[in-house]
Length: 85
Image (cartoon, rainbow, N blue to C red; front, side, top):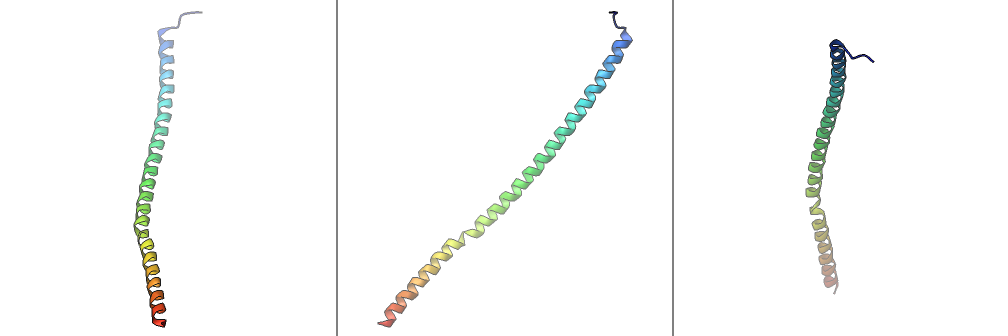
């Protein structure tokens, strides 16, 4: 086996550099895509959280309203029972 010449070493180093640059470009592109998807997921979660909060705020009167209707029904029943006698 003969020793490589400096020009052969330089050529192989240049090829290696090209392969490494292509690899880094692929990794960089994949990372950029992951960051973009993460941002979209964060926006979707924030939107869902906002929608859920508004639904929870709109829901609170329902149990109170049900209690008031029940109370009114009891009052009407008592009033009818006392009025009949």
